[in-house]
Image (cartoon, rainbow, N blue to C red; front, side):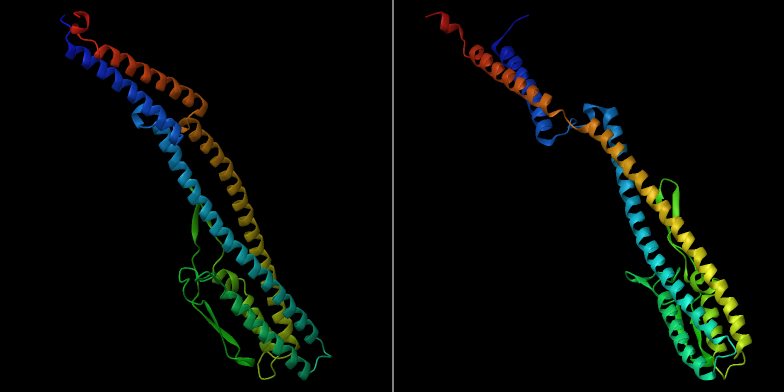
Length: 301
């Protein structure tokens, strides 16, 4: 085989390019901190890294949903506690006015407070979280309750809000973030019970008097128990959200560790290799310069 200067030059150039490519690759690893500079470096690891990245994005979205659900659950818990206090106060007033010693004047005074309680409960039913009505159901941009009338005509109108917001909190896991207004104030009987008590304290109402108050107090007790049941549901939801978030946090740590192990470069080893590659490249350049500088005329002098 004939060895020409062009052959030598070509081989030297190929060697230099190979050394330079290896040096640039390890430099990229050191500067980026990534073991893989291209998927072709390790196709299996690259696939696993993409899968881990996808899992981390999903975990972040689940965590965001859990935070949103927690916000709604906490707001509902506060609302239910307030309703509990108001219903309890309404019961206290009803008991004091349900005796034979109560007078028309005392009942009128008590009824003024009962009607304020009714208004407060309606206001709670219209609680907003952000720009949405918490208990608005599927029509969350419309106030679900409106108080109307007074005295014997005390009443309310409602959009009959129904529908709960289901949020994904894990792979194949969803949770209803709270109750709708129908469950809160209608099915529970809260509004109707307080309205009945108010009417039983108004002398112009057909239900006025001790018998009407007794009947209304029975409804108040039922409404109170229903509210406590809702509080229990909310507590269970809060616990589930807490446990799910803890599990997600642990899972995120595992996935992050896995991804790091696949993608992160061993910096100490990479720097050592970079130094070695630099030395090899410098040596190749020195050798090439000496060889390429030789000609036949150097030996004919």
